[in-house]
Amino acid sequence: MANQTRIKSAETTLRIIETIKTLDGAGVADIAAELGRPTSTIHNYLQTLEANEYLIKDDKTYRVSLRFLGLGKHIEDRLQIRKIAMPEIDELADRTGELAGLLVEEHNKGVYVYLHSGDKAVYLDARPGKRTYLHQTGLGKAILSELSEAEVDTIIDEHGLPRATPNTITDRDRLMTELAETRERGYAIDRGERVSGVRCIAVPINPSGEKPVGAISVSGPKSRVKGDFFEQQLPELVTEAANVIEINYRFA
Image (cartoon, rainbow, N blue to C red; front, side):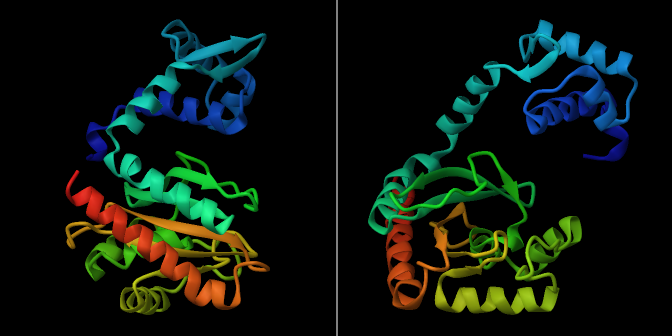
């Protein structure tokens, strides 16, 4: 959208909601300080959002309301890849004992849309709806590997290659080499590039062969994700699941 057509009040409303979500509830003064806006202005926005039932007020703390739960359910219901991938992701988590997940691309970032934990899975900050830079994850690199060089350049131009850990790839040429290797072997490897100490194998979901609709992965601590399990068994399991998902997606 062109800058001249952007509505500042709408952007402020969205930033207020995002701030309340990030802070897990906040008062007027905290939100105003976070956004650098007058308290009186923020108060007017909050009253409007509360009156329309998008916020609730708990004493002096504002929180997002359950109205967003309905919006989230609507998104889940229309996201076909999520419905199709869920059984395979659940099975991956159960068979490996680790965390299995599905990520899709939106606005040139990755968005986690489904996760399932096996009985040994470690706790990570990934959750449905969380956004992440594509180059920082195995899932994101799997998706990037299916795009053209020009498309990857567009994403880099928009978001850069910010570092999350010492292992994050922050050089364009190195990333392009990594993506070429990913295409050749059919799966992406995350060597602690978003979360230190966590390894991941990810495979793109590309039913049409033209543009990926997402990627699936299994992640776990490097103390367990190593050796033959990391180099052979896990890639085979995730690739097999991705193949099933692509077939089911194609004929759904």
